[in-house]
Image 1 (tube, rainbow, N blue to C red):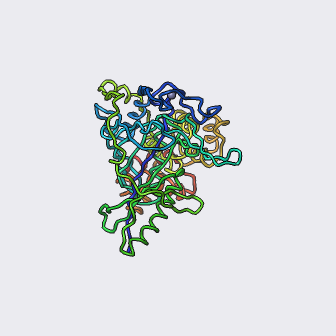
Image 2: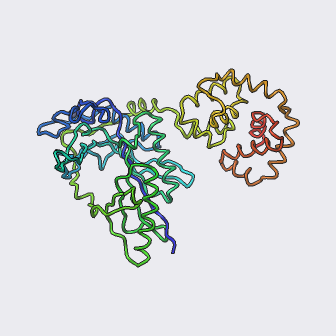
Image 3: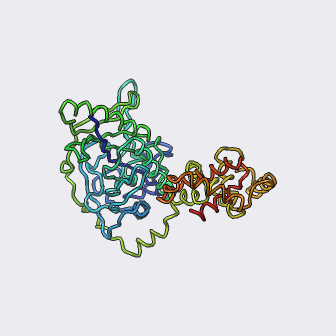
Length: 432
Ligand SMILES: [Zn+2]
């Protein structure tokens, strides 16, 4: 019997604001010269410490919501989430439950849309170190990370494969980096992942879910899906239901191990934090934040593909500022060389940090003296390839931009590499 994987993700991202979430302490846990330096009564959780929300962190959260098509309600508030652990001396974490800053939203993947349930803002806990001091096992606590602003992106259970998970997580990371609110450094822990995994036979939501924590890479996230798929199918095959619990991912064995039976939300005794008034997001404030939204990676990729650059190269280029600028300069100087510039940079045939775009174009122009640029020669070749590949034409019309790259490649082969790729692209765009 085959099962379908159902997975929702919870993604924690530490914001790189100057100060912490509810006090003026420096937010820089990774570069602190020593432990417990950036602390005060508020982030140490001492009695009487009063939290004051960080405006920048709120704006960063809203900006992220706008980037992934969330709705931004006009009112939000912070809640206290109670639990007992040494890294949280107040006995509660300031988080958001009923009225978060961002509701809904989505990110599209090649395997379908992943809907976002909400994004909320909270404070990080202190960091525990389990160490050996004078031969004794001790647990040390570093409060430099305590109350660092942390956003949590919670998705709907719309992830159905390990590959889709990786694509989705990369997109989230690229968006967060593009809007400049976090470095998303998985190794340092400024981006942390959890997966809620269950299996279904008929597409309906099963009566249980297994939460996998401690995932610190996209590959491990994907691995946890594969290993849970195997483990849960074996239980279901026996006619049993997997236990609803929290499991930890173990990279050494590529498996998960039970940590604890999962609490219900009620166990946290959520209630609105009486120290922090509700936050009103006025239309003016929202529009001011929206005006800071930069062009996002997906739209930049689409723009490059429209110039005839293949999708795989476009994805590499948008993640490299210097490459992107180079392509833009080539485009301004002479758009017909954009495709070859993209190819040459990605394949490292040229060093874009040394060769200027103008010199690059000059070298191509002299090389291309015998290029076929005559539309009357190229058009019949293009038309034949289009009529030979009706399904790819249909794909293009259905929105698959990379079909264009396929046709450019086919024309190049048909002309033994002599066709001028820029002119071919513009003819293709006209016909299609
Ligand atoms: Zn502090």
